[in-house]
Amino acid sequence: MIMDKLINSGILTLSVVLLAIIAIIFLFLKYRQNDGKCKVHMYYISGLLIFIIIELITYVCVNNNNTDQIVDYISFASTISSLFLSVVAIIYAIVSNNQGEAQYQKIDRASDKISVSVDRFSLISESLSGSIDSILLKLDEIKVISSETKNAVSQNNQKRSIDSVSASVGMDETDNKLMQKIVERYVKAGSFYGNIVLLACILSNEKKLRFKTSDIVPDSSTYLYGYIIASAALGIIAMHIDDDYITVDSISSFLSKEILLEEINNFIEKSKPEVKEFNRNVFEKVNKFFE
Image 1 (cartoon, rainbow, N blue to C red):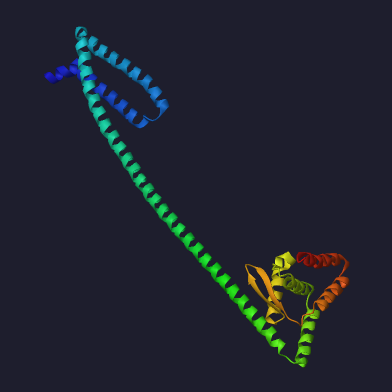
Image 2: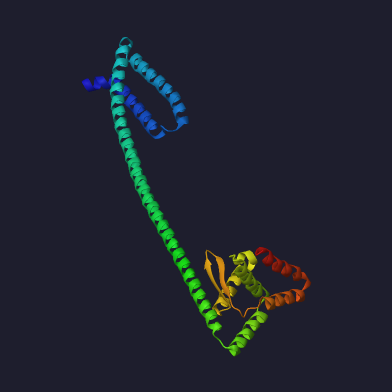
């Protein structure tokens, strides 16, 4: 009897309709909560549903001649709706909290990865700094070894040249003539730049001035340096090198300045017109340098 009465009164039907409407609203909000347009439409839908609910309540009450109890029905429906919405709100809060915690865990893991990457970059930076320092130290060692080797070669050439010059003093007249011819042929067979640097060595010894090969012919300084080393090895000059400066200690008596000047002037006169003036300027530059 109670069940039939409840059904006939329309309360059960109204409750079912209300629950269905609330469920639809909940699902709609759940899947469309991030869409701005859906939120605007939701206001219209909510207003329409409220209107439908009021009409249903009025219809049920009026149809059963229970207009005097309409307020009681509305209160009862509101209570049920509030309870249901409270349950929905609790469930939604739990779901949102779980999603927020999952996002926090992702952020925390990303932060850990960033920290690990920063540590790795720091280690790589320290390793590179150590490697660079090691390379610089090795370069300094190579520079020292190169300087020591250069000084050793210079001292050895100086010793050999002095020994050669000293030995030439004790030669007899035949040997002296032979050496004179050898040196003269060396000068006559030599290049223009080679004779120029030999002249620079003679003037350096006379004026007691040291010089660099780059002071004579900058573009061919390496060639001039090699020519000096070769002449020192033959005993024509005795010299030593200090910080790229060449100091001539002695000149062999077989090296004639007059013959050297004669060969240089002959070469200049026989030069082609386009280089003749250049060669003359090189010759004059050497003389002015040691004035």
